Amino acid sequence: MKTEFIGAFEAKTHFSQLLERAHEGTVFIVTRRGKPVAQLGPSEQPAQRPVYGSAKGQVEMRDDFDEPLDDMAEYMS
Image (cartoon, rainbow, N blue to C red; front, side, top):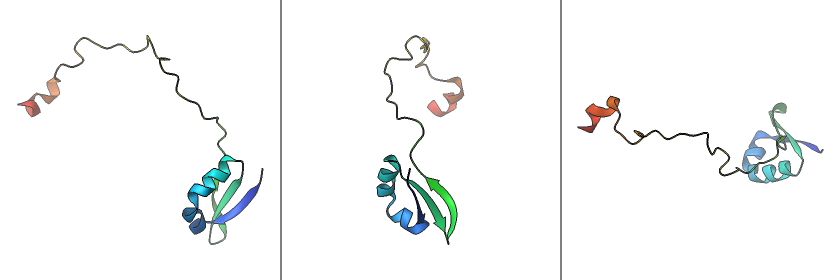
């Protein structure tokens, strides 16, 4: 894994390019006035796509779901 130091201004200016390179494995140490303040690198967690329907049976819709709330009565009149 390659590590590079980069100034805060340059990091801000080229952020989208840094993200792409971080995704490829480069770690950037962001500095301010020559002192390290942050680190930008690849995520340790793999990107996961949502599994549609995975909560089936876990959510229950009550019969009064769309009824007005008592707390909102003064705003509804």
